[in-house]
Each structure stands twice: as C-alpha cells, then as structure tokens.
Length: 471
Image 1 (tube, rainbow, N blue to C red):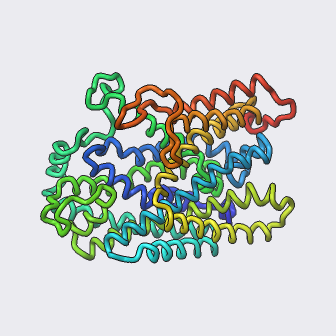
Image 2 (cartoon, rainbow, N blue to C red):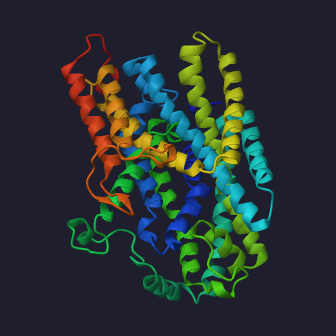
Image 3 (tube, one colour):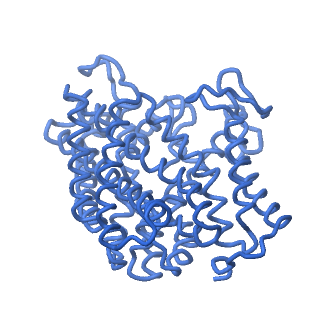
C-alpha cells in the first residue's frame, strides 16, 4: 500500500516522480510567471528549482535513507531522536501535504469554473472523488500506473497546442522578440551577474528575494514525503538514485510547454479576443488554449491540465496518509497494531485526508497562501533537521528542539499576513511597498541549522544512537 512492495521499476518510478511534481500548479504557475510583465521568465523558478531539488535528493539523500529500510522520511527522526520529537517534526510535513492537495484541487476547480461556467464545487468534488477512490483501492501501485497515463496526456495535450498558439503570434522568433520588449527582464532564465554584485539598478534589493525563493525551492523541495515515498519504493539503491536524477531532468523539460504558452500569451492581441482584454496572469494558460487554438485542441490541452492535477493530488493524499498512519497511529496511538490494522488505517486515512483537502479547497480563499507558508516551514524547519540527522553523528534531541524554536521565531519574525502577524524583528532591506527584501527565510534556516549543531555539542546526550550518521 505505502511503498509498492519496494519493487517499483525504475522507468515507472521516473514517470511517477515526474508526474507528481508536474502538477496543475506547476504548469499553471509557470505560465503565470512567464506572462506576468512584472515578473517574467526569470521568476519562473519552480521548474529548475524543483529539478535541482530532485537531483540533489538523489545524490545525497536517496541512498542513505533507503539503506535503512525506512517507510517514511520521518522515521529518520524517530530513529535518531525518539517518537515524541519525530511526532513534532511530523506536523509541518503532514500539513504541507494536505494544503498542497487542497491548493491543487482549488486550482482545478477555479480553472474549469471560469472557463466552462461549471459549478466550482462539482469540479472539485468529482476530481477529488476519483483521485481518492483509486488511491484507496491500490495504494502506490495505482498512483504510479495512473501517473504514467497522466504524464502521457500532459505531453500530448500541451504539446499539440503549442504550434497553434505560436502560429497565432507569428511563430517562435516573433514571440521571443515581442517578449523581450514587453517584459522587464526579457527572455532570461537567471538574473545577470551584475544583479548579484549590486550593479544592476533594475534589480536592487529584489535580487535577495529572488535568491531566497530559489534556495527555498531547491533545498525545501527535498524533505517531502511525496518524494521519499518514491525513493523508498525503488527496487534498489541504484534505482532510487536514478529515478531522482532522471525525474529532475524530466521535471525541467516538462516546463517547456508551459513556458511557450506564457510566451505566446504575451505576444497575442487580446483586444481581438472574446475577452476584449488580457486575462489575469493566473488564468493565462487556459485562455491561451481557448482563444488561440481550435476547440478540439483546446479540449485536449485543458484535459492535460486536469491530468496534471490528478497526478499530484493522488500522490499527495497518499503521502499524507502514510505519515499519519506510520508516524502517529502506529507508534503513539496504537502500538503493537497488526499489519491488517495498519492497512485498514491507511485506507481510512486516505479517505479522511482526501475529504479534508477537498473541504479546504471549497471553503478557504487563501489555500495557496497557506500552502506557501507550509513550504516555508518545510524549508526552515525540516531541511536542516533532515540534513543533520543524516550527516551529523553528534546532533541530538535538545539541539533538534532548539532548532525548531529558533527557526519558527526567525521565520515569523518577518511577519505572516495569513495570521495577521506583523514583522516583529528588525530585518534590514524593508521596502514600504515590497515589504522585507532581506532573505529572512534562508536566514532562519541557516540559524536553525547552526543552533542544532551548537546546542547538540554544548549539551550532549549520553544515550543516543549514532547509527544513522555513521552509515
């Protein structure tokens, strides 16, 4: 149910790894960033950021975690620090998966409700019911096999639509020329070197915000159960590394259709469309398909978006159910439970978490904001904890708990609009419009890491397992 019997072939693993990351939010968000005149391609960081996170995960984390035969990555903390500390670190991991599922379902519902005039609730409920249903029946095997089909749909649906969209604006060369004129930083994937040295006035302190989010995506993209579930299901250590690295490469390549669709949207004369004006950046992908491609091609493209959503929702719901069952129910709520009870609990957890994610998608307006906050916490809290639990033999429970507290204080010290928390720490580079441009997320992560190292050495624990770090 959880790890497909640890027999996942490499080719299926690569498909499911890629399809999980290339979700509806990934595709729509990439087109949105490319189309947004205030941001542009240089702010479409998710494709290469998540690709690098998968590659780094394969090089430095996959073999080490898989060699212990763990079931979830939270098992690292349970083995190193004990059940209670692991239960604390389990919270941001679980909440992140739930809000990711909710955000993706909300994106699907809003897209189809806006484009087709469908009922928002119906769109979300039907999508959630299908994904939760087959995940309950087959666990990771059903998720993996449907991911193969869904990835093919994404490739075909978006791939067929791109020539039509580009032809509408005069071809690729014309689209690139128009893009360079319309977007502030032009068709550039990364900032110039002058931006990092302070010699590019078009960036200013904004470069530090760019760098903060880039590091968040690269390193904060590693400590997710949805990733390690595939690593731990691999048939061998070598296969686990391979599916991570190849999955990262495929993840980056799968962003190309979304980039080209955003590019075409910039060069299109929206005054001649049925809208009469350019759509909001968040809706550019579906409207490019509707306005710039034939009806059949548009239907295939929107079907690709739906397939992308399903491939991420099922994976995330199963990952959250895995964490709940294995790291909370089994060790703390029902010690000594049988395999049969665990299997039944997994199915009930899939149903319950799927229902919760659906409810959040239907009721919360700020579900995306909440998911971004969870991604922050995964980066600030879980990444330094996972890194040191695996590679520092002297890190201990006192250091881990101190690192959690320090990371939380420094992260929320930069303020959090969702909870109405104003900034209460005097971070530099505060702009009256853009807010704090100091990279306080990365500062909080590094500070948390240093606190774990320091406190663990100042207050060593006599009875501590060094097995993980020594391996």
